[in-house]
Image (cartoon, rainbow, N blue to C red; front, side, top):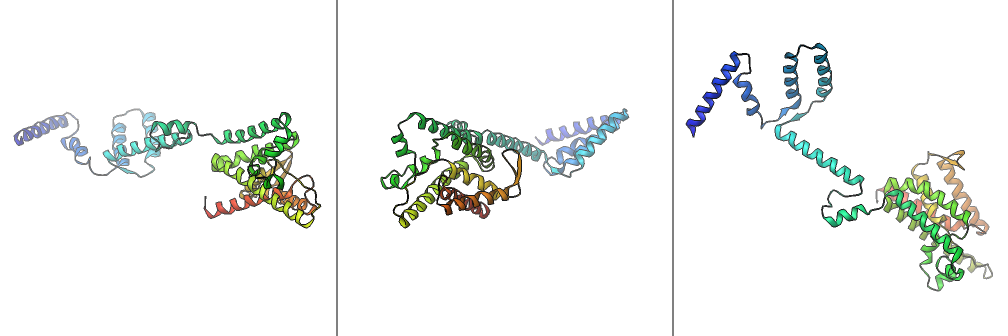
Length: 320
């Protein structure tokens, strides 16, 4: 075996010497890349040597100038790589591209099983969640137009009477319930514009949780306020509430707390700073509470505002 190796080296040296005499590369030039293939080699050095060889063999000035320009752009950053390192970087780069693509499509890069892949395809996007919430509100609006009213009052309205009768689900279902078209349209416009923004920032699951939390917070504040009013005045008129206002209020005010310097256009015309609009919303609800919640429940709205404040603090603290 050793004799064969010596013979092989001898033949290589002779062929290299012949090539050198005829203007080709030397034996050392042939062996240098092999001897350093396992050591870190500056990629800029490899590119520079290749470029110098091409420059020496090229007689076209414009071609060599263009090559020089692009090589200057490439060699501007000093990087180090080896033969195995380049392969590794290419492999990692491909994996990163694959991970980015899967994330954009709603997958997780770690979900390799067929079940998780099929599940990832069914994960709703931000826009789909917003439209789903709007569609649910619209569907229940049509229920109010055609279904039995006693059934709707029992299952889609929040009140102390429903709470005492055990209809706890109305604390949530009432937040999807609108019996009047203008009430529905107003809330859905706010949900679409602000909900889309929040969902794209933090994800569709975050928006769903915020909507539910705002709805429950509004129901709790409304019930506590009604209980207080009835305890101070037994003859106070009994009220019920419905609508997505508390949930939408939580979404709008969270956006205001996060971006107080944003400019909003009221009625698509009047530019108003976000912090000023937030102060106006909260001030109006406090005034409604002081007046006794005639037609619009300021207490329910304040429940949504309280949820928005807690969520903003949690985001600032990094609890999410």
